[in-house]
Image 1 (cartoon, rainbow, N blue to C red):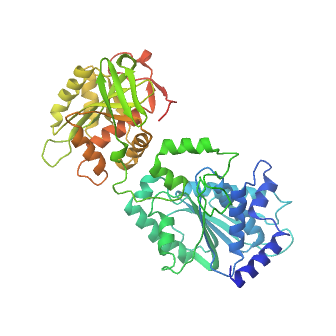
Image 2: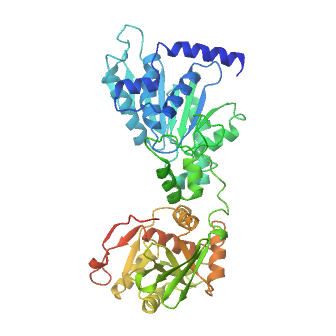
Image 3: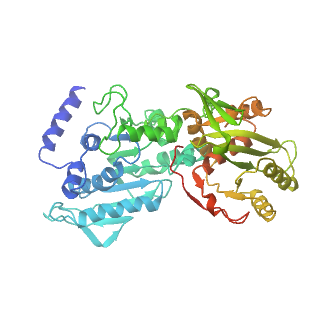
Length: 495
């Protein structure tokens, strides 16, 4: 620390003896709120920055569900306005309605605690997305500040902020990965939000990492060039070296809430790519790092058994203990440059391992799709045939169901890349096997390795669908007539 920083730290500690911090306010108001060590650290770092003579910028990077929004988006603004009742607070998040929810909670904290806070909300200006304080505090000192909320990318013209909170600027992974959205949010931050800052304003950005070029990535990479110096509070779920909380390597943040077993389960479910980003706050480049050849495993059919070959030896599963289904990625045309029609035949073991038994892949006109679906069913007799409920998939679903095939519509509500990540997690933990020596194997694995930068991704889609379908286990006692909707119940086994 420099002498100036030491002097500031001493002044802050002296101030803190006689004043509540945001964490202290939360503990006073909500008896069920736990002042966990990471929340106390975040609270103190923010307060210290507010009182700093240096540039007031704090970037807090922390895993989901660790109490960050309650502290920073609810109690921090209430605490700040009670201390500086003539100031204005801006709160932004990925969506205007989500941001407004926190604006309403801050307002409620103030209105419901008149004995603890001196500020009051004006009753004629109390909408949760924008409200003002009364002209005077309970002790007669001048007030008149207030709070406004907005969605990231939304308008802020006409308003200024002394404290700006950015809480989770990215809605989901698809947005955070989109180059268009990355540029949009960065332009909004530089061209809109920063224009609204009052002199000496504090910005607190608190979020989980999604991608190397999310907003935090831009702030870290370009902060100094943009004239800003950010204090970074990075709290990985599993401690690394020189941990801010003084944890040993591998120790969790909040053991009372998320023990090591829970964190390890999250890691297995998400896979290494998303876990490193969302939980370790250390996103990796995504190009060419989704499916790794070293994660591929193989099986063979031997004397009425499936032999699953893994690093710990061979596991033999009787065929009669397994069941099968199929997944399909249809193509719109058979022209050379178009996508392929792809169908995967999957075997599921009692341990819910996925065995890719066969792949049919060809350029086929839509009029031939029904024939290919019928051929796949007649050859392997799957319990159901999954088809994407999008584009030409609608026609296949209707036509094949009329033909008596056990069609199951697979909802598609994410990008191909996002849908592939759960499959990546399964490969990483070793629960997907390819049929050894299959004639389609080389082309299939080459496409997997090239994703997401390869020319084609139809075979990746049938893998993603398979993992999605296995997110539910079929209740075969209620299959009913062929082509009817299949009854499902939540699948609770290993993913």
